[in-house]
Length: 273
Image 1: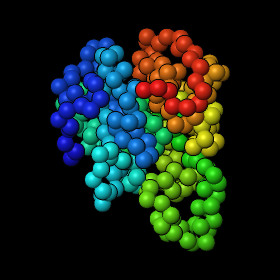
Image 2: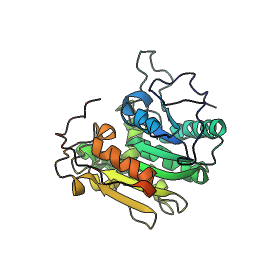
Image 3: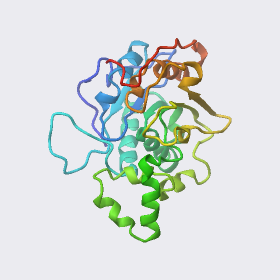
Image 4: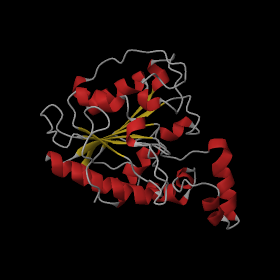
């Protein structure tokens, strides 16, 4: 199992002595995206959740086993199945430390699919209450036509070549039409016992089309940022730090105290951290 960190890199995050309050009984687990880590993705949202009284935890998953030792650890590169097993261990640690029965998940990009595999294939569905997704990739992405290209390789029985084209072993799994996504959609991608909120931006250039992040179901809510804030031009990069998106995350985690999220104009670059 993954050992909890001895100290939090972000203020208030990964405080293993934190005990959930009655107002926020479910700890929040933050799951970053591809080629990133627990501190960079959540530099803005993580401390803000802690300040609001949530026991907040984040992990870096999917680090290549032979990756060089550097100052900044980069994760989200291993197959999603591998990363989901790391998340499974991490959630168990969080539940054991806090005494909670369930966690809430906030995921970004690939970090929306890792918990999905955990929920559906590793019996994690009963341990998740609310599942908030930033730039989810439910139906995959056809970024730069890569999904079409990989489909041709598979049709020619050359799919094994994909491992030679990138060190991101999870990336082919996230392409529209991949075998992995087909497996995830068997029986429905949304589990009935979990409450889902999908937060997307029309200017997402990584999840193509952005509507791949939308879903349907009685327990599924979709939020397109520009529907309430047309001046928010945030792209994929920076979405986890976007003030409008963060407001929607707060509302999704605590709908009883939902508020009108003020519209903050964003020019499309990552908001200042």
